[in-house]
Length: 385
Ligand SMILES: C[S@@+](CC[C@H](N)C(=O)[O-])C[C@H]1O[C@@H](n2cnc3c(N)ncnc32)[C@H](O)[C@@H]1O
Ligand code: SF4
Image (cartoon, rainbow, N blue to C red; front, side):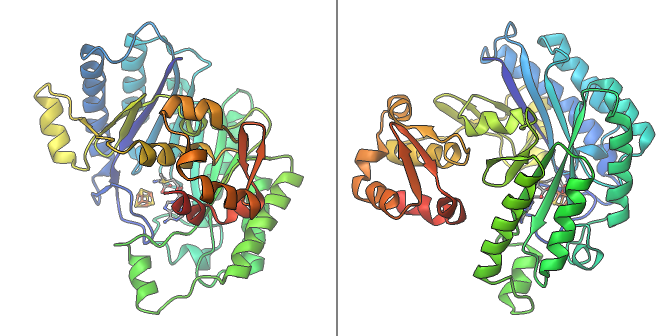
């Protein structure tokens, strides 16, 4: 099977206006704290191994450093962590090692050091190249910072198998069709192998949500949302990208192996406060508290808490929600066997209605989302709950 490892580095210099991830805002100090954090993560790894839950004979398939802003950590700090992983497991050059990289946090010298340390996939949080839209995000970088980073990655990964990905957010308040087309075209032109396009979500507790609730901003209407979705899919597909997940596009052979494992319901471990783990059928969470995490790991105690799953139907739908996102669909016979719950039977009327309305399609036991199903995914899942 191999190991799929997520590492959460929850420090940012400033909180973006739309963000509800677990992060600790640490102005002027995020780099130092990220380095110290990676040392704790290495200790957490040792505790997991001592608990007997990870077989050291199995190779590491992927490591994903996310956040927060893991790219604030030094290349040396990230290198030390990868060395610690290498000391415990086989970590071959074929493993996918991703670093979420924020523009403005890595120059050419740092990228070279990260490549030498073994990072081979850089996921760049561009969000938008339009200065007028970037201004409402609270991000600390400019569009030109994004361009500088992408230019560096383009140059420095050209001679290797290393790759880079771009994250964009669509449906900003006030975004014009022309601004979106420019973002899409520029992202494709930078030669990234992978582009993620997320529609802006107004999470509770964020500055964006407060502005929305106060009537200060207006999101794009439903027609424009649908147009953006279709235009994005049509444009990127025509550029040679595969639309392999609702929000994700990859050049052939360049899907995110790490994220694909989530959607295939594979096992993974998550280290750092705010990270989740799945060792079928058990789920664990490291709570959102950097201080409590630090205390626990420093005292040699695992921080994870097992998440109870008392309702088999709810567990099945939650997992289906993950698996359906992938274009390949879900083999419902396999799924029913694995979760001991057949949603085709527990929600027979709803399931039939989704097929009749054309939101789901069925081919033998394999069920897939249609285009309409992708557009109304959240309500589709709610309907099955
Ligand atoms: C785990 S997040 C954080 C990545 C990194 N900290 C950064 O800001 O670049 C990964 C991606 O999710 C997307 N994202 C985060 N918050 C979002 C929101 N409220 N709505 C839509 N997309 C969001 C962004 O594209 C972001 O790059
Ligand atoms: S940099 Fe990323 S994780 Fe940090 S506040 Fe901004 S969106 Fe959230």
